[in-house]
Image (cartoon, rainbow, N blue to C red; front, side, top):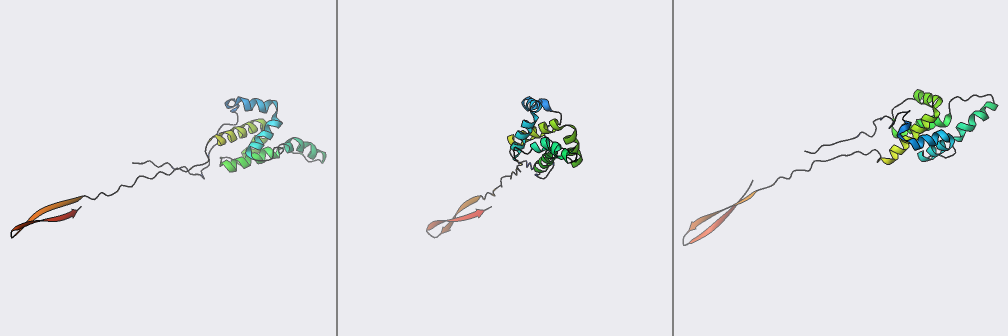
Amino acid sequence: MAVVVVQDPNKETNWSSNLCSCCQDLNSCCYAYWCCPCFACTTTKMFGESRCLPLVDILGPAVMGNFGIAICVPPVTLSLRVAMRHKYKIKGSICNDIAVSCCCVMCSWCQMHREIKARNNKPANMVLVTQQPQVQQTTTTTQVITSQQTIGMAAPVITTVVQ
């Protein structure tokens, strides 16, 4: 009997790693710690967006502060996190994304980087459908040979029986 395993491509999953699981990828963690702007640019590029996009998070508060507008949520970090959740169908909420983006920017970037790496190393959502081989009906043919007595000559009679 064949077993069918079907993965629902619309089902939401969790992040592949926790927010504070930096020890899973020490290279990325060190890169983010020593040069977070470069790390954010690299992660953004890996996701398919412009490499310069995280500069808005860095320069935005300074520019907007000159106009008296305070920015407390890094807009690129938040928007990339939300975009990643939607693209990869990850469970979460906008409130959680805002809290993570405000309180732990570096951990958020590290988690997004690990998620991109994990998703790039796995095949995309594949739906595996296995079909059980069909059983063919075998027909048995039996030939029955009977002899029929006729005058002076025996002629065999062949009868075919199909089951």
